Image 1 (cartoon, rainbow, N blue to C red):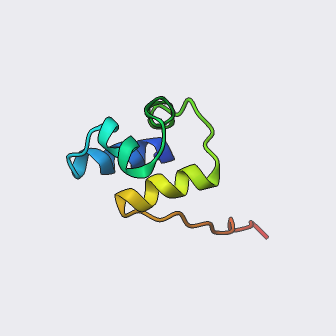
Image 2 (image 1 turned 135 degrees about the vertical axis):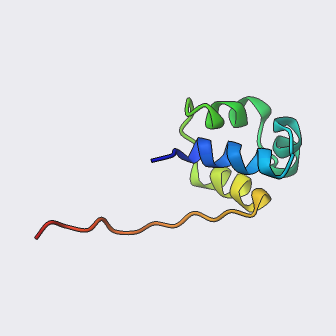
Length: 68
């Protein structure tokens, strides 16, 4: 299963946007963005939402299926 950082990086590259451009457009620091893409950061939902909005992505949450 791909991580959120992997999804962000793949989408950014698909759109041909540099890390610097994405950082500027989303209002997130370049160091923070780099760490998120490398799965070395634990971003707040607010920061994550700004990046995802900029890339045209959305975050969804679902319940795990139980084995009952």
